Length: 88
Picture 1 (cartoon, rainbow, N blue to C red):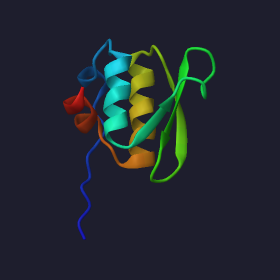
Picture 2 (cartoon, one colour; picture 1 turned 45 degrees about the horizontal axis):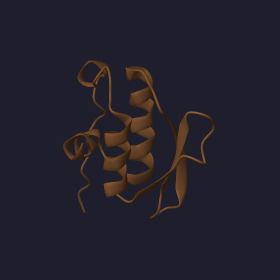
Picture 3 (tube, helix red, strand yellow; picture 1 turned 180 degrees about the vertical axis):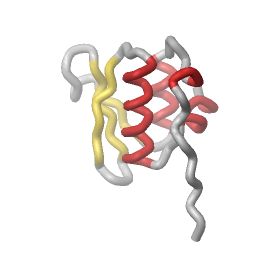
Picture 4 (cartoon, one colour; picture 1 turned 45 degrees about the vertical axis):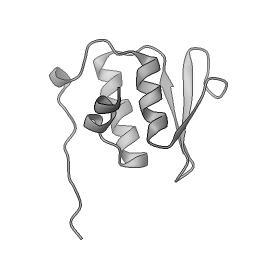
């Protein structure tokens, strides 16, 4: 069975500002549960229900942080940046 291998976008391909509400809504459409109470301060706890794995997402982030958040999302769920961007 062939797996789809997609590389991470370069930093120049990522937006400099991102609407966190749209970003989180997009993640929810892929099966993530978003909890404001699970994170610390201005962070969100996001859990991928299929694997029960969680990660913390800041409410504001730079391109560098977005890059690593996207990498974690991909590792936990297989969801790629292109998929997220298309749902935003």
